[in-house]
Image 1 (cartoon, rainbow, N blue to C red):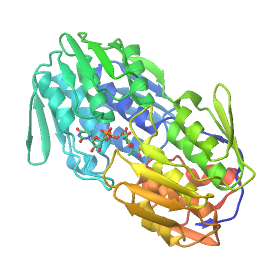
Image 2 (image 1 turned 135 degrees about the vertical axis):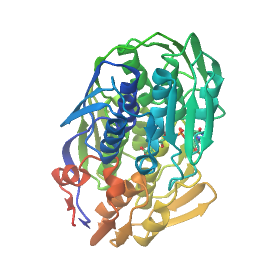
Image 3 (image 1 turned 90 degrees about the vertical axis):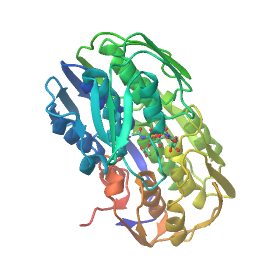
Image 4 (image 1 turned 90 degrees about the horizontal axis):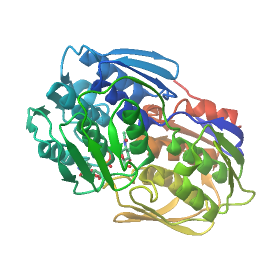
Length: 411
Ligand code: EPZ
């Protein structure tokens, strides 16, 4: 429940990156030793991954933002549908499990609100490494001893790059991943794997080379700060004409987002591990086109659309990664936003004031954009189905309250 009309101001600590922690948790399957992870965000998706790993027989000890994992003695190599259906990232256990045990059975993730999100590139890459992979009764079944291969994915895929990179660490010989994803979370996974003894070069570039090794050892690793959580708070700062500093961040994972915030009229400063965003006037509308990193991130699209709803002028938002990532549009229109969708582009003309309404969250980043829009809408808004929000934001309402927002979680 949000009462609009506040200016956000103050400091907020950003949590570890969900999209780095999820593949890195799965990487625990690659070793018989302990993997000790710090700065792990307290999110429902993380709890789901921990439950999935424990279900396979791994020891998982989660204390606050530290998780200690040991996958020495798995009791099954099957990731069941009832867990996988709640979180697509479960597919990330396929590569590590196959690489270490020569066998894996993972339920197909199934559809998702923002698009079909198939895993054909994950399968194609594992087959190129010599695995026998087929689909039966809604499960991906993979068997075989992996050998290095030269793989070119049909499109840039974050999860595909991560699954194949993990599998390649224990394959025999050298694997080259071309058209690899360059997201900072892919680099964070590579750095953790290297700490575990993997031989990886080129993470963060379009070509990653992995030299297989017989086994990986344990490691202790700090998860990268979440650039999307940080970006979300910085956008909210400009929307409410506030002054917010996000701390415990990695500023250079947000270069293009900081540029867009400046384009919107924000005064953006940053240091080693903090970014400050402030503005004392109505923000200006910006044009957004989502593309793979280092371009503008699709996970920030909904948030900037919310900014455009109350900005001065008209902004065009084009989504090129997912085929159905505009579900926040009808909800924002309920607040009085002026948006028209033409194919993959939404044309947003800013209005002076939004007016509070009852809203329904549909997917993770859409729900963040609805909360942010409610902060600047006149009167009260209620956002329903915020389990979507809890998947990717650690107690967002508490962090926003600390910044002066009038927001509470109601049962
Ligand atoms: C990751 O999803 C992130 N999730 C997403 O964040 C993010 O939006 C996405 O990357 C793009 O940056 C995690 O890291 C856990 P993709 P992923 O494979 O790996 C198509 C959030 O809000 N594709 O890069 O599933 C796919 O359909 C979430 O935190 C295939 O066709 O994304 C999509 O259109 C949402 N075949 C495009 O590629 C494949 O085998 C990019 O998908 C794989 C992908």
